[in-house]
Length: 511
Image (cartoon, rainbow, N blue to C red; front, side, top):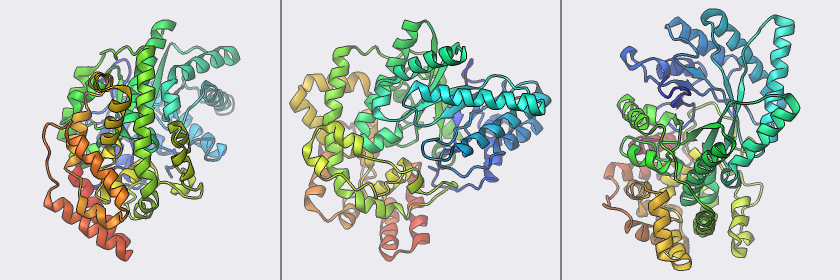
């Protein structure tokens, strides 16, 4: 494997590709292409996430991928792993989770019979906030394995749980989740993990708290994991869940060197659909090569004083981000209905996103007064970001300029400069990338409130001072946004989707 002893490059089923959509059947061929070596027309990645969280994936898809990989001479456990993300028990029926787990056990039986090794050694539990959730899922896995062995003669090896941590508070206390999981597994099951894989996601925190706060939370989370592992004399293997565009992590060929510096300490990184299909095999190869060069590097040590600064700055960054988002959220939701859906997802209403916790985090009474109603279904992060780009407003710029200016004024320019320089070396490249997709003429067609326009304009002007060069949007990009605008106004969904996809391909990802 690329990242021995755990995989380095996890191909996912995120719907962030602007170039093409996928049926469940397409995803079998897609997985094979992800896992085959480049010499055989593949991408040479070593882990495949099969996604069931809010997604209508067939229960037998893991088995189908195993069968196809075996036909093509790939050995599970040596050449690749399959790592499913199961449905959230809190947001979907527990029966669906159990059906997924049963499908995994069947897939592992096939892999063992034909190749002598399991294809699935880990299961990802989404939206993890406590160690007890890890224990509950692990207990369920063991029970189903016992049932399979007793009733069907299916004997498979241990499958461990990877907690997916994707909200701000959990990222800042991620080691507490592992601590709780370790204690619960040991006390209730007599089970001990020799090491821990943890998936840290940027997107949901970015949606609720903004780009700056989510970036800091991810960096701090990695640091906390290593500090905990050192204290407990164990090993952690962080998985960084990111997309190709800045708001969702900015993993791309032009940014990979600074990415690996900012998120040093990673063991595995997600290679999402936007990078694989909108930027292509050459881009994937350059990114993976860059990630290999950064393996085994340690994250910066972040002390208590720096944590206080991170928290204080994040509160300011989040406040300035929400001052714009809460003013445009209704328009954003309207636009989101025209963003193409390139995977078989459940509706936004079944996996809605919320801004409540981030609004409370700001301690700003004015924001608390204008929080959106619970009935407003905020889309998931990819569609959320794509909607803002379609409105001419790059999401990673929102709150960034004013946030940095306000934090410098309140906390001191030197403190904020040190924070940004030490923990966010990728930020100037984030800003440079986003500025080339800022289209104020389009923005004014969607946003008529002058106060909101002025806030965004301030963000852009301050952000420019952090960029080394500023490029105007390409005329063809603006033309695509104009076509999307016309189609959205007329309610012509097909034409809007087509134009939004064209713009997404120019960016290198839908959202």
